Length: 135
Image (cartoon, rainbow, N blue to C red; front, side):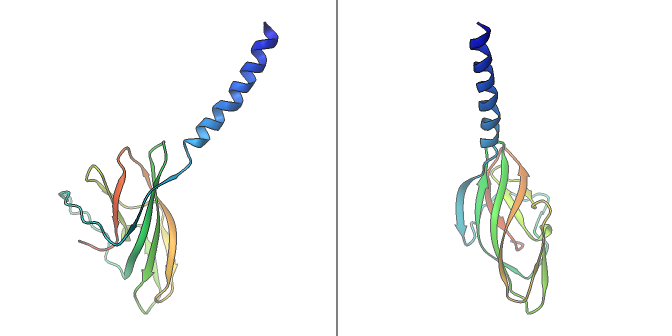
């Protein structure tokens, strides 16, 4: 009996970690070109910090752990160098909450366009939209 249970136990150990890694894999929720207008109340008046960036498009992603990510394409509309920081972006979640991404600092030259992948942390609610200008 010992011979049969040991191989089964070892094969289960190999399968369990693989399943945990799959839950970390991101899947694309949807791609957005242009702005989507939602009408959730903003009682705390949370808005992106004024900036010279145009939000061209974004792709929303998530995983089974509730991590929320986005690939965002921005253009520096200024004739000078600018730094895109987390305060310049704001995600609107399906529960009406607004949140800036974690740890974002990206240098832009005049009129430069760049894409960046950013994390908005964990939430059981999906991201509905991302904005870079006060509405």
